[in-house]
Image (cartoon, rainbow over all chains, first blue to last red; front, side, top):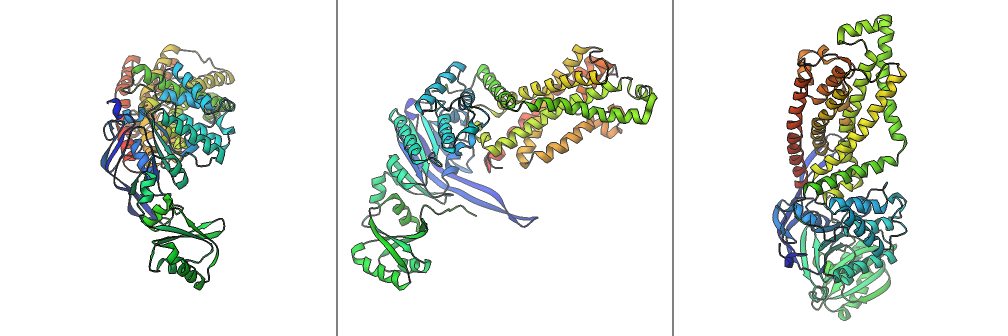
Length: 338
Length: 283
């Protein structure tokens, strides 16, 4: 493997089909195939922070699990750090640092330091290197006060931090972080993102999955929007936003029925309309070509359908709008195949 | 960055010992566990011991001698229950490792590292052997003291060799059992069933000679049967299956060469099957 391939990921037509049983009562079940990834092809460049953005159930974790060799793809091929997925799985694992499943990958009866030393051994670090590396990470992530306490006494945010620390133990050129800020409070999430950026500055490639579009916008050099196992869009954040062309976004907040949303969606000039519940009221995101011309008719239609609109916000295009424009749904929706 | 390439023997050994250490650290945080593990085989052996005394009365020793080759039924039963403790540990720990770690998420975490499952199971086997041997040796000595028989009669060293040589094929069979747990995603019922079947087949309370011929043939395909009979023969002189200790030992060595390789092959195939579909972490 050449150094130039460190941190590079190339995916060609990766497909993953799960075989499941759909239970029907006590004794009956039927066989079912779920295509979790459909011919996914993309390339992640060395040294970039690459975002995988999509709602729950979009296929992000399946893709990550394939890249980390936990799952074997049904079809297709990928190269991680220059190693072939279907042939060099051990080398891929040795050259990748992973944070999957949040705090579930930790031994709760052990201390943070003991966890790091254990995983260091599984990455074949010498005892001296394990200790040195664990000390470095503990210092870098300000885990000093916690390091010698058993993990079961940690808060959920502290456990997430330790899970992140575990991903750094082998000092790999490629970091794969699956929703790393889940369950973190805002300051801790900000701190973790700063560490990820700093690690990226040292040349590490980062694959960062999230369903939080603001996180993807601020963190990632390039983003792939993934939904129902397919990559819908790929590019830098400005490129993705620009891909909406002349499209503009207006958000309505209030009490809006689904019939009202549907009526808006059916109006000429409306490209997409997606409804979501936010803090006890409804948010309707409408993608249009010309908001000035269309706004009166939008309000009129909503009012005609008994909608109580409390707020109208014309907004800048966000990644979520890109997602809505391509799928007609919001990122908050769970698209898992039932 | 960590060295990338095929791990050396020392690196694999170090990873296996880290797994052993992890388990020892974990169990050290449950201090009452070892005490319970010492009590169980004594109570387990005491039940048939007392039943024998109740049914045969003063003739218990003579009747036992006539059917088993030793009058020391106390040591015979204690050896059976304590070798079973080691066997039970082997099955339980490998099944529990797979199932419990699937549920807690740590199984996926260790599968993300370059350490192979064979190395991890090697580390587990060392831990299980340490825990099982410690508990069973202590239970045997304490049981002998309670029931007033000499624990160290006969060839103690040879008995230990039978146990140590038998451990490797035993963990081979346990790995096969682990593959089954991985496949059916169930451990408690399987371990429960296995414990009864194994205790029956290895003859923890009786010599396998009393089993019907067909069942006896199955029992002899199972390494713990040879372990327990080897220990009883070395300590109590009940008689080896092939008359001499070295022929019985040779059979255990044959198991030792075959069982781990076959079991690893089966485990690897099941593991690949799981990775092809739902993945190691699904439970």
